[in-house]
Length: 308
View 1 (cartoon, rainbow, N blue to C red):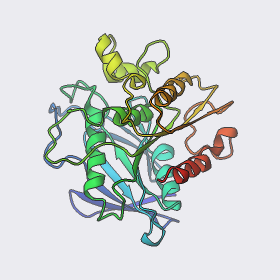
View 2: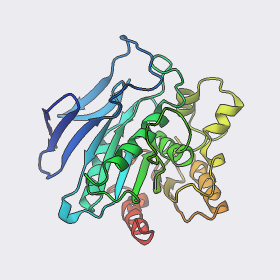
View 3: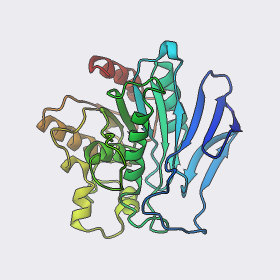
View 4: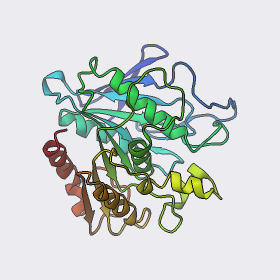
């Protein structure tokens, strides 16, 4: 599959996927200036391209939304904000981005990929909130454009993979945090979350060490550890979640998903957790692999019975 890019303006781009009817519009996330920005000309965004497809982003300086909308005749009104993983060091933009948007579109759901800034002291006054700022603004931008994009503003969820799952669960538990100046009253709360082999905690005993170091530093304060251990931030207003993990995940321990699910149960938030015997980590849609390849169909069924 190859990409052909047509640049329309500084703010808008359109990409057509060969052998697919999918079309994406790219919107820059911050048109009035990135909050907490430190100007640094030596910090340059990098994209890895393989056979015409951008597979990875690093050192992101231009956060953006890649908006894939299903044909109007097939649209369910549901939308999902997609947060690719990469340990808060890069973004796995192909199998945890493009492929997920296509899967959602094939099922009548808008798939909107977030190219979010990766935490860095070189360009951020507070690197721990940089990704959350992008995720909050992304959710607000989707709601502001819901009518235009044929989306129900009450059926907007978030999906995250690995460190992207940490960002998705952070958005789900910190959606009301005042991390930048908001000029309207549009909510950043997801209506539901889908967490795939997610990093949840910053507890050193079972976190993903790279994600923790990149987000809150080598020697974080106890307050920072607690704040971004999202299993400790669940309230009665946290959105319901569909969760997937593999017991043999040697990168992000399955305990991450277990403690988040237990927190949701504590507050009687209707949610679902699937722990598969095998699968490891980083499998995306997981076609032709172990039993975890069942998760996309299970997820769609959960969304349907949950009213999303």
